[in-house]
Image (cartoon, rainbow, N blue to C red; front, side):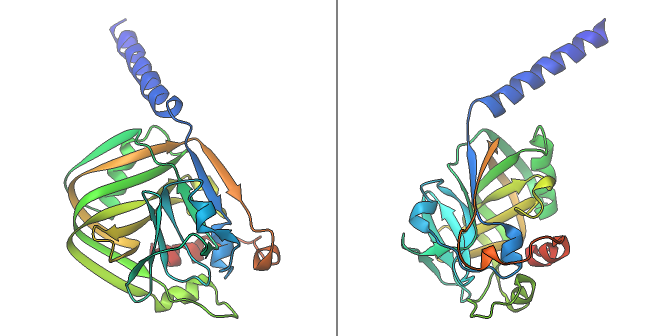
Length: 259
């Protein structure tokens, strides 16, 4: 009987937790195009940044011509260029791939002590009820180390992304303040998005950042937005209509993500 009662209370606690996490918010991940199209060199899209931020105030992506890394923070779109310079982008600029959400905090995960990227993934993963939903993450604070990259603008004929990142610019930041934003996606999105963690960094002065390759942090709080829905918008013109997307591109994605 004692075991039954403890099990019952555990189940009730889980129901309360999941109800709070899943039912209190109707967040939707908005995504333009697919990661496999980007891997295959589809670097031009017809979605403007003005239209993109109508769907969310936090996210990531890139720009037409694969011109650097995108960080969407507080409704503003920043470009981390290959040179390392950061620019606030105009509404009329366009993207070939992006993900955004109207961010709200459903869960706070305190990180105690020093952890690397793998430690961060483990700590946050243990706090999540299920790996089968999408999650947006935001981490604001002081970071011991961030290793980030950006890529150079490409000219036609476009190479595949795995070849582009061979010439990426890598930036190393130590004892730096800033924001890390991005998404944790379930494994079944393979082909549409990047399964697992995909995060970008922006320094607090908004003058440096990039796609995060590695990090070390301590004593921070990870804000998590549980996302139970996804809207996918696909390009209706250009290279996307003709690119071959049928084969498994997991190996290429691992190279691109720095995993």
